[in-house]
Image 1 (tube, rainbow, N blue to C red):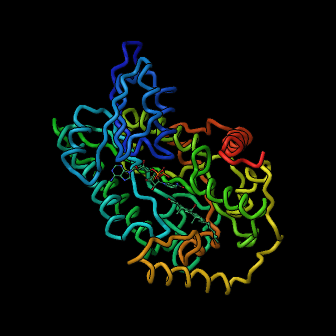
Image 2: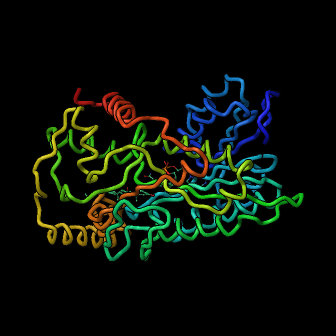
Image 3: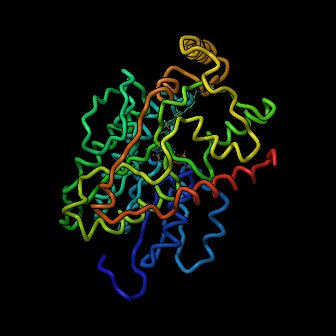
Length: 369
Ligand SMILES: NC(=O)C1=CN([C@@H]2O[C@H](COP(=O)(O)OP(=O)(O)OC[C@H]3O[C@@H](n4cnc5c(N)ncnc54)[C@H](O)[C@@H]3O)[C@@H](O)[C@H]2O)C=CC1
Ligand SMILES: CC(C)CCC[C@@H](C)[C@H]1CC[C@H]2[C@@H]3[C@H](O)CC4=CC(=O)CC[C@]4(C)[C@H]3CC[C@]12C
């Protein structure tokens, strides 16, 4: 993949390319990867906006497929130079079964690795998550940690368990010989909580606030800091690391990188108010309105109701014991590893990330503006 002024020659595949992050990766590649000849977008559900991308100079190939189906993955990977594997089942609310989460996130990743090996694709970037580290079930804080900070990573919930297993598979595959005899070069990016245009949970909070007459009620102390990163910067990091994997294979291969930018350290709710505030919502209370023990009880009640109602309907509220524990445990990163290893600098400043997100919320149907 040497830099050249020749005609674009590279074929990229983005799995999960129609998801929240995947869409940003796809658009970023089209904007900022001049060596791209073909961009393959592989997803279980193809989005209508893909059509508008097909009018440009890069060949955009939409592939409806399932990462759990080895043959579908292999067919999509064959001939690609780089795979960016963002597809995953992001579920911490109990919507999907633990088996399904494992199947999509772990087997799906296995299939992607195997497809690279069998077809001769040499470069694989995996979207991991901060959740492979923590917060752990003991609620230990991870304060301004980096990739080398010791932390007792103990997982129970299917989602972080699956991401941790998948990440391990990706890292262990680094150096494996692919078809043709060259070594596979892999790395994993670990975003903290991603925000920005298209963020479903932000949308849910906004709609809930509108239903409650423009108010949200504080549930988590303002002192609990939660790491957040803008989706455009996460996408940029994927594009950049994918570009550098060949040139710096020895340094980047088998490595993990937290995704970071200049977004401020705040509690989950206070951070959301950076966007929802200018859109007309108010966060009521300087302290949590309910005592923590009551939230724990409500979360447990929600879990019980989910279990009892499962034969009849899907009850999956935002509050459950796991989400409460994550939201209530400080987890922030402070690192420059991506800058040192592959020259990453955030593409979007905090101000720009904030403005873009606010404009997106304001444009939402039923907006208070
Ligand atoms: N949203 C967040 O805050 C964070 C997300 N991540 C990771 O980033 C990745 C993308 O997450 P989001 O964009 O937030 O989720 P998303 O749900 O918006 O996107 C995931 C995409 O994967 C596709 N997909 C799911 N199952 C599939 C299957 N069996 N075969 C093919 N495609 C399938 C979905 O259709 C969707 O388009 C995931 O791997 C997630 O674990 C990591 C850290 C934070
Ligand atoms: C009402 C509750 C007290 C608070 C609800 C907020 C929660 C829904 C969210 C708080 C923290 C979020 C998670 C965090 O950002 C880390 C994540 C990383 C991922 O890889 C996937 C998403 C998530 C688990 C994210 C999910 C929502 C929260 C639990």
